Length: 270
Picture 1: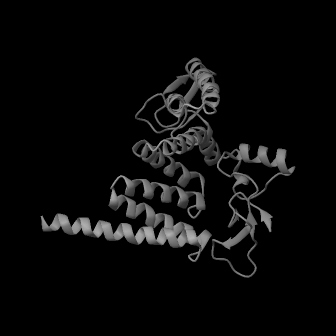
Picture 2: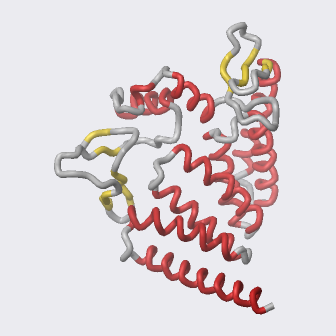
């Protein structure tokens, strides 16, 4: 078994480690796993490996370091957004050191603007971390929402930093039973997961599961069926189909399908 950033096995740590096959393999295929969080740039992953495990990864994903595709991915996951709100391009440093240039629309974002906004993000981040320990959850939610808005102005929409903040907000909003806003953030997180993790990663399945439950709760039944189906198709690979969790998911999916069918019948009858 070897380390690999594009692993073909997951280790699920519950009461014991569950080892499951998630990719068709042959007798002589090499089994690979990852020791670290793989959502991040090549430089970030290599830094984590060196600090925590004292080795340098040479997998196919890491071997692309410095190449155009790797530079683009790093700029998207850990860089800044274009100053044009309608542009989805990524930014690279301007050779003349004036700031950062969008690689899609060529718009310059000055280093002064980036520096000021980054400073504002840092200040509110410190306030947000302090507020999370406070008893007033609504105040903490407000601070985290303000931080998320600032980060959305600074970072690319697929930013890992922005994704982590939205994960925190999703959890906080569910704790205060603000289901509509929780669903909105859940829907923002899913596309980032799909970009940074392999298609059958359990985290994507669990996010679809959460999204499906929220949609069902808010009576968006057809959307719930779609999300729960995606969750089931992914999680049956890592969790099997005979566990209590998967049996519960299967039952929820059957119930949601029946409800969606009933609603369609009512519409057709009218």
